[in-house]
Length: 250
Length: 238
Image (cartoon, rainbow over all chains, first blue to last red; front, side, top):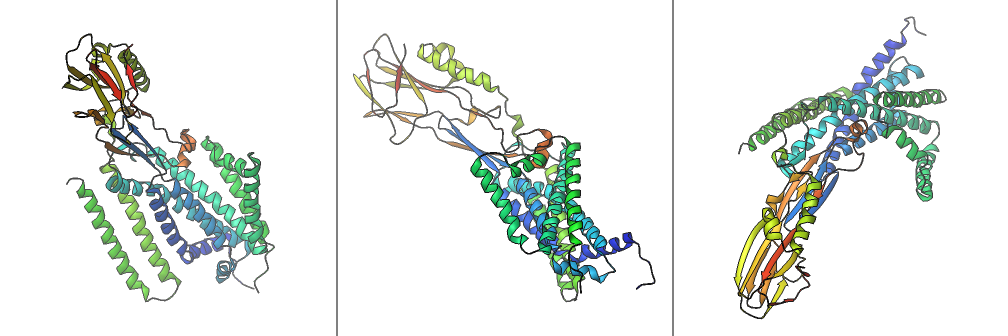
């Protein structure tokens, strides 16, 4: 029993600051994954070739930060799973804690990670550009600098942050489920890949394709924000509720 | 040489950052506890962000060369041009109506009765050969190469196209494919998380390549018989 009353916000704040330092290794894996994605992107995300009268051989290679954004989402998913594991959860008991403060500080940490991941993912497209320009091809059909389209960069950063955060939320729920029962380590991938295979065999757009369409084809920014916030909110709430079923640390 | 300057600057900055980071890591490596590790991560991460920011600046100061200064062309006009030129050639009016597309001319003296015409074996000749018989036997073969414009993404790339090579050897008229020019372009597209709002094609890329019509027009003496040795597919003026 403690004589000092500590507010929830204070605890969350302390845990959050602690986690930023204690979980810092996840940012090393972010750098590694993003550089790996840049390396993969150097071959172009697509190409077109042609020839005219047999005398001109033409090659157009397309470059974009698609791989980097996708890898960053994957990183968000893995990071979220990682921080639900027992070793990381037990770190919270350094402080006076309960499930609410622990989950909240995790959510804030994941939000911070998403912001960092989203910004670096979008900036890495310039790293790719510089590498392509100096080492692959110095002739370009289309390339836009920051000054020409600053809004596109901001839009890219903002939407990538939201995507990474959504994947973090999904990862957090998956991680919590796995903590409840190890059976989920088999069940969840089996359910995911099983659905994919069944949908592939039936040739119809099923759940996975619909979920993909729901987020990735949304062309209204406002609706997109609402969809991501609501979905991430639901995923986190699910994880918060489920985490109450976890055993109390002895 | 001017292009090397930003590259050198980048290399110097990256190397200095790497050395600074390594020194900082060396200083903290003997300190125990989790936070010395977090400091190292912080330094490395700052270095990474610095490199990314330098790239943003480099791209702004020395932007990627865009081939905007190339002549713009309308693909539909080019398509019509190609069809029209072929029709004009078959109608025997190419010398008058297609003169703007004339790229090269050859003149050969030949007094034989038969002439073999052949492409270099195993080479696919991407040129249509149209033959016009003159009204008289003057012992001269006049060859002219016509080519309409080619474009990529609405930009004229005709100047890169070379004419085929034509030689009159002992065994006949020999056609060779032109010297190849290779052009490599890069195109930087938006990331998918931007494309979905700007209504660009999510997976596809929109490059259009339009190939010009190339015609080798031969004017031969009235009674000269051409023997096609390698299935060039000779078209005679109607």
